[in-house]
Every structure is written in C-alpha cells, then in structure tokens.
Length: 353
Image (cartoon, rainbow, N blue to C red; front, side, top):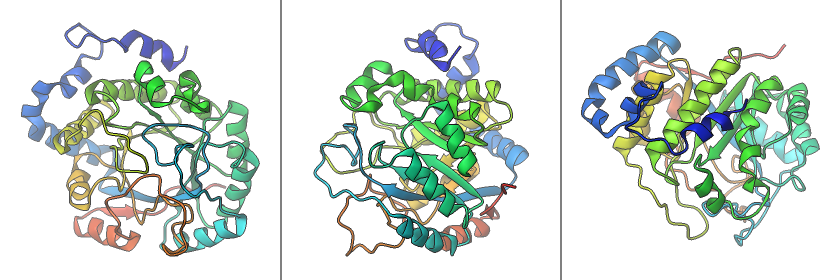
C-alpha cells in the first residue's frame, strides 16, 4: 500500500460525509474560523508539550538552477529565459564557510530538477564537502529511487524535503505540462522511498495557492499522518509555502489569506502534535513573528533563492532567483528576535557518528 491509495479514497471527498478524519475536517472548516483564538491557545500548549520553547534554524543553499521541467509557477521553468549556473566544489565550500560562520549547523541544499546538470554523483560530492561544516544535511532535489536515497544517506545526507506542490492529480498535470516532474505517482511516493532508505527526517508540503487550500491541506495532513504511522522512527515535518512572485507571468489561481494561514497551522498542530512545522522567508517578517507561538518549530534564516547567493554578490549574479523572499533578516537578527520572545534558537540538534 502507498499513500496513493488513501489519496484515491479522498481525492473527491465530500466534506459533509462521515469520515474517520472528522476532527481534521472540523479544524479546517469555515466554521472553525470563529474559534481560532481558542484553537491557538490549545496549539500553543501542545507545541510546548512536545517541543518546548525552541525553534530550529536552518538556511537553504542553492547549488544549481538548471531544470528540465516546465512547472508553470516556478522561476526555474526550463522555458524561462534566465541565466543558468551550477556551483563547482570550490564555490560550494566557500558558501559552506560563509553559512557556517553564522553558527548554523543545519543546511538544506537545493537544485533545479536536472539529472544531467546535477547528477547524483555531484550531489554526493557536495555532501562530502558540506559534512566538514554541518552536522545535518538535507536535500530538496528531484525525486530519487530508494537505492539512490541510500547512496546519499551513506554520503552523509540525513534529511529529505520534497513537496508534492499540489495533491489534486488533475491540477498537478496542468501545473506540470512537461518534464520528468509530470510523473505524479513517482513524486508522491518519494517521501516513502526516502524514509525506507534511512533518512532521519522527511519534510513534505503543498504549495498553497495552486488549489483550494482546504482540500490541499487535508490531503497534506493525511500524507504526513500516513508517514508518521508507517515510519515511527523518522521525524516527519510539514511545510506550508505560499506562492510568491517569480520569473514568468503565472497568476496564482487561489487566494490564501493570512487568516487562512493561521488556521492551517493550528489545524496541523492540533491534528499532528508531534510533527515539525516550518515557515519560510516567503512570509513577511511581522507575520512570521506572529506565527511562532501557534505551532511553528522550524524557521529559515539568512535565506536566498539564488545559486551561490550567500557569497556571490548581487553585482556578480546573472541568474534569477527561484522566487522572491519577504524576510531578508540575517541569522543573527532571527536569533535575537527569538531570544527576545523567550524562545531558544536551536542551531544544532543532531550529530552523525
């Protein structure tokens, strides 16, 4: 059995029908909007119970923006006329030294989805270099076979982040008209392959704005629960990225308001009390700060979505960012903010032996 069996059961879900997930439906319902303050209080207590007043910090490192896909919502779309770049190993090490100087020990490495320009051998070489600077290395790249994930685990990678982007299979096909990413099932099953391969943590997400957010979050939470139940020794996390401007002329088809985002976070925390919840620099600084007590456990800091963006200056940059970020504060600024709010910024919580 794979998660696709559950998806098939609930893809045309009738929200008024009885279901074993009645509580999740209620938490995501329009009626729950009148009870967000009460939900927030419970979510806060639940987060303190399982995570304490801690926020894990990490930053993304973009290795390459070559891509073979034509995702209509992405700045790295193969048809977009942008400069392409891939870091060599010397540049990777320079980026690593710069990021490590901030104190961060968790890194998320990303590439565009091109096996030709960012082959598995290249990812492994980058991981070998990054091991000298970071205690935890996560990847956000094209989906792999289970044996390939095992190779990366052996090379020092311990975390996998992969977003389904949109769970509705019909909309998924429209959003991904060409390229390897068009294979819905292969991507959907990737988190499970990574968990079986020995990834310590697996983080999934839906790109909010591509479909009705209630339907997407419902399926996202079911996916996370499926992974939690099947892989109890794996840390399962959830991200809720909201569409941001990027290269191209794609118009976001579904609005997701700040109030909607609050309800999403509260519903996830109340239904999945042990799951990590990440909020990225896609969101503006004030809003990110207000989300912290509601169930957030991980935040990115000092982020850039440009290849080599931590060390290559804006004047030197010819490539385009994957999307625009809203919170440009440094790691030191985010640390100071968390400490001011009484939270402990966690820069390292894992060590590979």
